[in-house]
Image 1: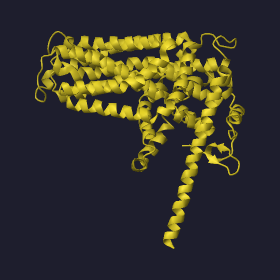
Image 2: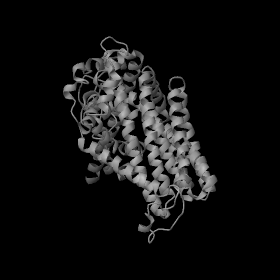
Image 3: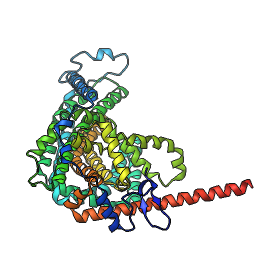
Image 4: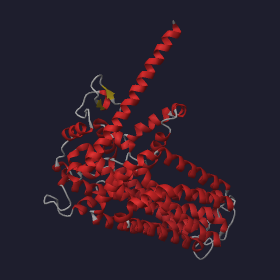
Length: 505
């Protein structure tokens, strides 16, 4: 956390409470100081084969072994009930514990095929409309999600699924409260997202990467859903089925996160190259930049991607919750220790690490730590904390997942009404993963823009001078806001100290 120092009779606002090159008395002066303070990036240090070594190989091995083992188990579970109940005689090991059921894999596998088709279609539509209607689509995601969650909650109550009805109703309430709490941040967030879309749309090869990875994910989902359908049709009781589906869902989430973050590294590397060289068609631009970024992402940096994908989503969720309770002093005090731990974890697990991995070939922990320290040392962390672009893109991903789960759930309800929640919830995860593969191209551009702004602001100024001025002005405002909070806390502490002294006297 950066505390902004206020220096008496100067009106200067500085990160970390000490004079630094960022201190200024006006947005114009602040922008000039940011330009002077920018750390010029040595192109020779970026994408250099000399610094490219295999990183986090242990986690690469764990991920690959997990895929092989899980693939074998999924095929086993699916075949056991494909066209014949208990084909492989697995039920004999569970007959004494769980109830018997004569369902077949092919009864439920088509429902998952629908989920895969709908999720892929939503992802492809998002990419196709990215250039012309991205702003509208993101606004719809923010405002429609609450209504959609409420409608699904009503449907769950109507189907007498009270637990899920309460869960979706709670989600709708939390979503509504969150949007209300950050409504003042949305204009700046939309500005950042628009510029990220502008960058991505100028790189058509990025779209082809996203399409290719969605196709790879669909192939894996074909195997995954085959096993999941076998579990839904299995002889295990509801509790046993749910536990198996939870394990399979965690695996699918990790696999989807790995593919998403691989795209993240590829796109971040490409965006960084474009910004460093001053444009997509600049003469110093190396040949085949996409293939260079892709090669590093799926070889030397893939272990770091596998490692980071396990933790970044959970840490980002906890950190977002922290920002929501920041104004509730009682609740904040109760969970302060927990979120101090979260702040420590953020230093080692954050999405900005993938830019450092893409550009410099660092291991994940070092990349995350360097990115966070870079933000804190320049004061840009105040701007990153204010931006809600990640939350907005997550809302679009969740909405896509809900639509996918609803389509699969409705078809299941018409044929196997007792399996609606089981199929619908897992289909929702499939939809979220597929739509997330489309959303991540924009998030990658956002993270690259912030890293470039912190490392060398001149890169952003050359790319879009007006956007650079808007970012600098907003950063100055956020530092002023933190300065005011620091003054208020200091004044309150001084007042409390005086009152304690008077009481003791």
